[in-house]
Amino acid sequence: MKTTPLPAGFRIEVDPGTRRLSDELWFGGSPARVLRLTAAGRKAWQDLETGPVSTAATGALARRLTDTGFAHPIPPEPADEPDVTVVIPVHDRTELLERCLEALERRHPVLVVDDGSRNPAAVAALVAKHGAKLVRREENGGPAAARNSALDHVGTELVAFLDSDCVPTPGWVGRLATHFADPLLAAIAPRVRALAPDTAAGRYTRVAGSLDLGDRPARVAPGTRTSYVPTAALVARAAAVREVGAFDPSLRVGEDVDLVWRLNAAGFRVRYAPGVAVDHHEPASWQGLLRRRARYGTSAAPLSKRHPGALAPLGLHPWPALTVCALLARRPLLAAAAFGGSVGSMVRLLRAHDVPTDGVVRAMADAVGQTWLGCGRYGTQFAAPLLAALLARRGWRAAAASLLLGPPLTAWLKRRPDLDPVRYTAAAIADDLAYGAGVWAGCLTHRTFEPVRPALVRRPLRFDPKGTR
Picture 1 (tube, rainbow, N blue to C red):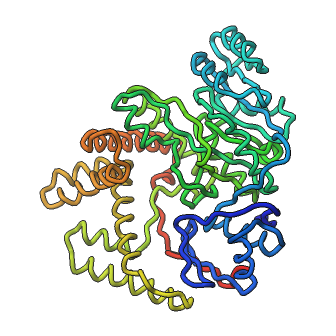
Picture 2 (cartoon, rainbow, N blue to C red):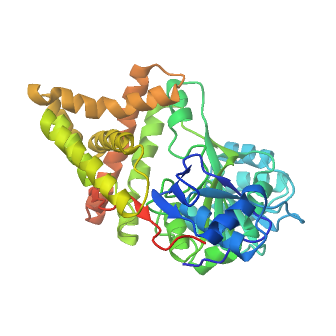
Picture 3 (cartoon, rainbow, N blue to C red):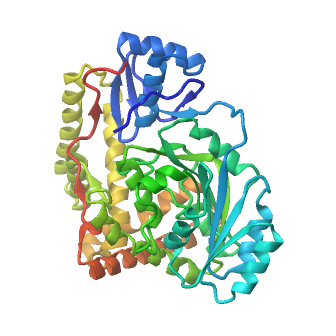
């Protein structure tokens, strides 16, 4: 893994989930861990807290904090306009292409790749109207092949991939490009907001769209809170994309996840910056929405074969999982014993590393709640027949109903969408069923059960044993 310090001029902002347990101990990050700052590290933090990276020590600490998710980088103001080409792959959809081109600022060259459209003359006319360059592919190869064709014509340092059904906001390229002052950064994605009509399906998508990854910035890597970003909108270092072999044209879906994970494996950094947003056209009907979700699901199997262990649908910690199982089975004494075991196990772990144990009971209760929600969504997506069978059995009806209804109702209470709880819950269940059907279809096609196999997580918390400088 490449670990050069964050360059001079960068500032950092602490993630909202980070807690300082003491002057030398920090808790947070993704996956969750405890960092122990050395005396030099504490001095470096004093400098970073009020100013930018200015020394090797502050650069090393800033890199460590931003790599682990304790903080996020704020780049310095650029001296020059970024050297970037905007690439837009398109297959028909000329109305959406025109809307996309109209929203673009004329500050950067634009390259449109016609990926075998049935009416190439209409695409060519739009491209000429907006002063862009056109590359024509005779046969449709999918978005990965189209983007790779564009890379052969890109001579700029950066390339901004933008789907034709997106509507960019002013300055989106420039604001993301400032982050490339970090030489390890290979790609950075904005927030992709749902541009949906005022229908029930549209209102659901606005708050639960699968491309919208939320409002928290993150380093993007498998096994973290933000494990991937879509290439519906993505600014990348062209040399880094070429170094890892560009997009895999054999993937019609999931090619963006595959690229991000290969960049990460090569030691590059990929980041999610929700302070910059791009709007994305969404289906107007339930049929279109669910069909697309099922299509996304088919990408899980080929991705799991290319990246073993990176796509676990559910991570189970032993003690919280046992507590949830006991509660669902209506065994309160066993559940209490399992919860006591989880608290005792965590207390012993923290004391072994000289970490305060305040708040352990609440933390483990949260872990039980998250495990219950995770099991519920997993059951809806991948074990719906089993849930249906349990709903039909009197002794298990309440437990199965809690697994089925708990996740969507919890999400409704958190998001408060412009949709009543009954319709939102029904939509979320249908959404999960459609995605799960796509995953299972991919599993059968590629002869693997990896995408539906839960993972047992034996390390509930990571520690930095040597301290961070």
